[in-house]
Length: 429
Picture 1 (cartoon, rainbow, N blue to C red):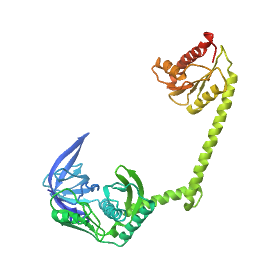
Picture 2 (picture 1 turned 90 degrees about the horizontal axis):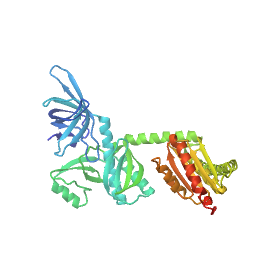
Picture 3 (picture 1 turned 120 degrees about the vertical axis):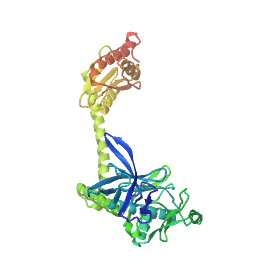
Picture 4 (picture 1 turned 30 degrees about the horizontal axis):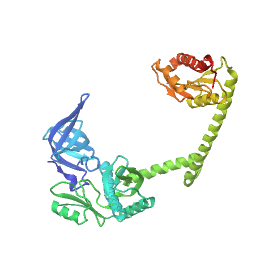
């Protein structure tokens, strides 16, 4: 079993070791991914919500040639063995030098220790236990078993966390027997305990938290740097809190400041007045939408009147057939509705050809008795298309290449249905 050096020293950046095993994990387009086993390693494998370390394994041949093998992932198998994924093979027995990507390791230690601190404070101050933790590339999250969190409570937790960071409390590591860990858990001293036998590794933040954990951590809370809560959202098991620590918090604050400054520049207002400026823009936009809708409706009304004048009633029916290349679907439906509502004995057959497929609209005035939706459905079915609607208005999406043919069929069917009462001598109702 691989000796895990990070258990005793999370700050170990380099180490010597020997390859114990190698196996091919996968092969794609001639490129193999290898799994390399080592006698001892400082590389952390993905576990407990913390991602794996990256780095390099370096081997030197007897001739002095140096082979650098990047470690692209580190995983732990079901037997507890650590495997280092590489794109180059290393022979079993090869002596290697391992180098950890220190910037990534330090970042992970800041986030993970920050999570321990944050979870302890949420539990102590708000009785909100942590049920899961995820350390992402740009931010981390904890899920809390509570229904909601008030804003003032979040601000209080964040303030307390940063006060404890400023106190630079010691973060220590020790291992205890399972029986002792069980006793600590029963006494309420230990926050949680994994389902495993043997010795238990404990991480303690002085006078704040004691937790069983196999991850990497800083030596004191001051090395966390800072902690910033970013967002809160409801999830299935409670509330998810997003946070960042250390240099991530600095980067997040810098990004937020840049966005705020850019927004203030676009609004020509001081940064502190950006929210008020946005509120004014939203109010203006809503007002503009209402005004635009009103003008659109007025335009459709006048347009409908003009179309009614242009088309005369022939054989007791006014058939208005138009194709609009520059009008959107919503306007064409509105125009058809306004037209048949304005004058009797009218069928509107209109097309919005602004998009592909085009939208075909069939509407009829209230004094005509046929069902527009049924007629549309029947005619389109003959062409293998689908459409339908209400008794007064129907619509369908039709490929532009078929528009002329289908308009002819719809016009003929609508004319026949609309004139049927007159042909029977009963007249329109």
